[in-house]
Structure formats: structure tokens, C-alpha cells
Image (cartoon, rainbow, N blue to C red; front, side, top):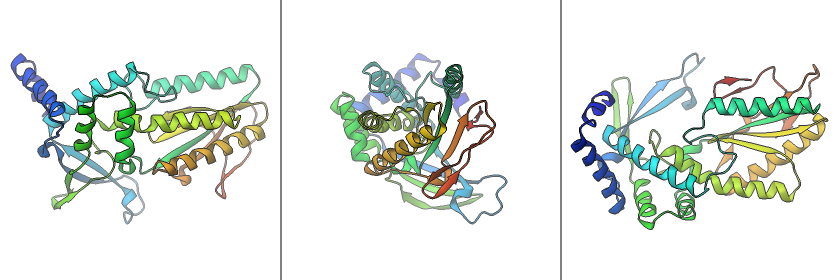
Length: 300
């Protein structure tokens, strides 16, 4: 479908109509019901021992192609506005154009090697936010949009965009009835990444203030629902203490934003030139340093 659409959009008249629809959606503060309907295809994850748990499956959301195209147009405008108005936190590397997994790998490699030059070990605590996209609070999201200095029409548009969404589930050739999915941001939507970045901006700002007040010198890198705390010291014990405190502060803030850390996925890495290892305890679970780190599919 995308291939045919690209051919159609080469005609100025067709392109003009698409732009007019996007503009009218904003001006009327309305997202058509037709674009809110989706089909969620349930696909089993490979190499699972059992498939009796929902986490053993990938839900792939299929939306109307024209609707996704218009979402891409609005997402481009929205990102340009928030970046232009400095409403993106410096630690955010995910959900934004011109920032990729390659950039994340380069940043981490630079931090680690610069630490070695100073004879310091770089310790990294990797965390994962559980059920991030379905858990975003609509009221907090619209407040973030308001703080970003957007026109009230745009904010009212998103208030309509987020609600009354419907989907039916597809399993092989079986189709379920249609259900309302009025939670979080729409999965599969081209607007989900930038809306997620806007949702996290105030949280990351508050987190930075808290860590500064507590005098905890750690860095943070955010990749939407994944993140890294980074500490550099000559003593691993000092780094462990700093990362543990940062982790607890973040956990408390996330709870206030309606989010939670998935503690079972938390990992600890020490990058040094020594063969010694240290353990790290999080919520009574021991986390041991690994031989390599995988982040967004990149091994470091």
C-alpha cells in the first residue's frame, strides 16, 4: 500500500488534498473515527518454551494507511516545534529524528573510554519501564503538550486523538469482536514516539533536579521506555551506591507519573580493565556484571 501511495503523492493535487486533511484535523480539533480503528495481529515470539503467557506474543497494530501518513505529517511538525522550543531533555536519545542506536553506541563508547583515560571504571545501570505505551496518563500528556507552548487547537486535537480508539484482534484467521482501547498512546501510531518523549520530558527534568539536590553525580540516557544511569569512579562501591540511590529516586518519580520499573529486567555493567567482578542488589535481587552489554540491539 505504501508503494502505491508514494506514486499517488507524486501528483501535486493528491498531495495537496492530504495536507488539507491534516490541517483540517487540527483546525477542527478532531481525529476521524475511521482513523481510530485498527486490527491487532497477535504473533507468537520465536523460541519460547511455552505460549501460556501474554508476554510470549507480539501485538502488531495495523492502522489505516492514509491515517498513518497524516500522523507522520503531524509528528514532523510537532517534533520541529518542541525541538525549536527546547522542550526535549538533553538525555533523550529515543523517539527523535536524527538520533539513532548508532549515536547511543558512540556516546557510551566515548564515556567509557574517557573514564579509562582518568583511570576510572564506568558503571551502568540499565532499567526498563514496564508497559510504557499503554500506561501513559492522558491528563499528564495534555499538560505536557500545554507546557510545550502548543496552540490550544493542537492540544484539543490530541485530547480527541487519544480517546475512543477501537481495535479487533486477529489470531491466524480468527477475528475477535471490536473493543475500545482508551489507554496510553496508540501502538503503531506515528505520533506515539514524539508524544512519549513529551510525556517523559518533565519527569526527566524533575529527576535531574532531585539528583542535583542529593548531590548524586550520575548521568542519564533515555531511550523512551529504556534508560541508563551512568556513574564513573575509581571505586566500584561508590558507583554502586550512587546508582542504587538514583534508581530509588527514579522509581518513586515513575510511580507518581503512573509508571513502574520492570525490576526483573534491570541489569548492571562495570566497564573496566580489571577481571574482578562485584554484585549489585536491587529489590533483593542480585545483579552481576556482564561480559558485554546489549542496548537497542547494539553490543558494547
